[in-house]
Image (tube, rainbow, N blue to C red; front, side):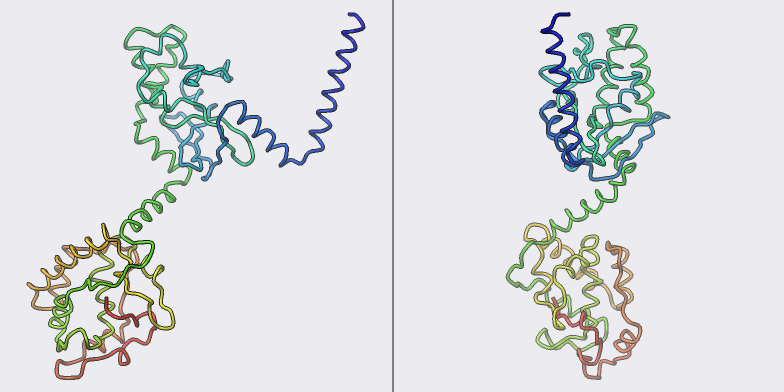
Length: 368
């Protein structure tokens, strides 16, 4: 070894020691950020984060570690993925991907490409994500079904090599407990994302019914709706210009809003709260023109039809419960004393007004 080589080695060693010293001087957060930036540059893809806890999916005795990312992508860890399909140890050439598709190495064999389906191209790219500050690599959960299809189709076509047959067998076992739709549900259940998904789905329903801003007031409840309530309760109808019994507001919530959509009334009361004893707007002003208002009109038409054929309040309520059961989880019950006060009122007595009934300011909204 000549002097020049010795000198170069000493320089390299000094650089390495200097780099190590600089790394040690950095904060843990800074080192993690540098590692993330390097990974993003290496893989050419942004690093995503996990929004739900880590979970484990068990498919016919095979366990796969799974996550839900910030864009709702369901991911299986690469390590558990390759074990699930029968590969052992580290993925050889694990950072070598098809230049065009970034396809995992276990799918790049020439004898498999003829069996790729249309979904492989979109599902096969590796996904870099961060969990508890650790950089990880995974694949879309849907890719598992694609891989199982490819190896089983290739086996049926007699295209597999001997060293690939065990992968086809593992895929056959996975397929028995796996469907394309089912894997999403399994991941959501394992990570606890199912509850988040259900809440988001409910919010999407409510958003279709309710607008972001108030609309100008328009009369949505026909007089006939209230006329039938008065008739079946045995009260004298004096028109909409006379304050109704406060309990009518409860009847409206029960007959209409609780039966339009799940939690619709709760969301309405959140958006349209009582302020200084009154609501600043009518609930109907929050309904969207394309979904909320038509749904209300359709429901009122059906309800009024039931009212027309009902001689008594009890008959109507029985028909209503059968034809249009409540869709909200939280049911509003009348106070016992107030209900008795209303039912004890005879048709010959003056109408019970707001001051004579409920004293709860939340119940002091005008009729819709």
